[in-house]
Image (cartoon, rainbow, N blue to C red; front, side, top):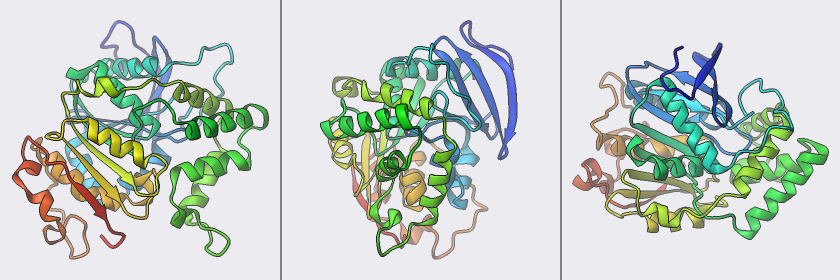
Length: 348
């Protein structure tokens, strides 16, 4: 893979990973792993996951939905960027390497685009990843076509988030990925229905995520938490955003209030909020079907559609008869996206 920009070079490490190719790219702010899925000639969709997750644990649920895979892979080549040291098979980052700032991670996204020769892209981020991509959109406005944000962050950490992040940081530093850290992370990711309790057993999603977290490099997670815990407020920068924005948030998400406030700060003509009932923060894994209809109509505003050969069953979330009337408005299907507040039921 050649270098399309002067500051980025490939170290020539690629491996096949679940149908995609993983590229390890050296940037001015350190190495970054990017898993690429799809046809390089299509529009680019950039993803960025939450703390301690990567594309296999943060976006797999969404892409395993046949309708979502059809919609996204038909229109996009997907570039999954992992936070430093979060990729599959990651090794510990050297303690001598400085912890990157949020601005450096946003600049790193720009260098990834330069490496692949990408112009303007669509962005999909979850929580901490949504902050990095929103910051990227405010710094490189001409390079972002649209933002799809899941349980997004845009302000400095609340006292509660700051405390939990500091607690996890200390535990990771001294004890590694212990059960308390996993419990804190799982509470951050999922709603009560998925987490279970004394009477209801843990769901398969929870058990799979616990197993996944056991494989993470503790100090790499520690570094990303340090970065996110020192983020700055983007309130003023949001006013300068020039792209349309679709925000999803679970009603049980720790970041529900922040997502609602963020929507209020954006231009109402070009933003929409979708609340997902009985769901935590990582909607892409917990209730990915709830994202399908809003995403489909959001992308219609860019002239992007699902392939017509995909069947639409009566239970399909993309069946026209299941579409909310609000989403059929001209504003929603055209350049101006109508601000909406949708509750996506479990049966959808």
